[in-house]
Length: 157
Image 1: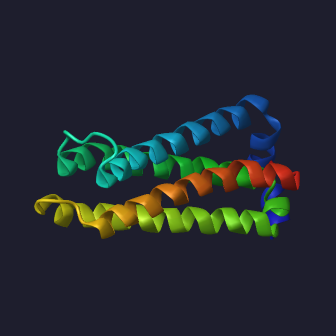
Image 2: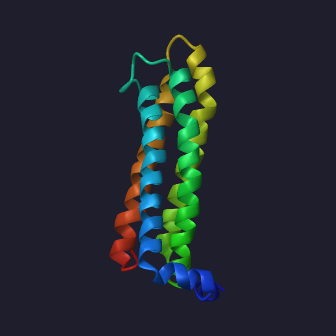
């Protein structure tokens, strides 16, 4: 099935046209860092490490639309990159680890976003919120590592 995807005309054109693949790769990495960077600022604010003078609700309202837009573009560009070598990537357990890390990171990003209205209303951000934000930040760091270093060691990236 995955090899058939690789052999479709548009995927062959995409994967063999250097500037196309390179452009999508650049977009993918930029939007991942755009998304993760926006989420990291919010996580650090929840933890009380960064932007302490900024209102958490206002900061998150400014950053979350950009973050989720970046995620959508990163997912689309990531899928395009996947199609070029789908037959190699799909069965690889390391690729599965990468996908699990992305899903876990997104789940914690949603937990942080959903908790912010409640946390903003409190006089002090609870320790549990800080722990959730710290886990979210750690998961994003692990996601970046699994998305770049581990596949490279497998000879796929």
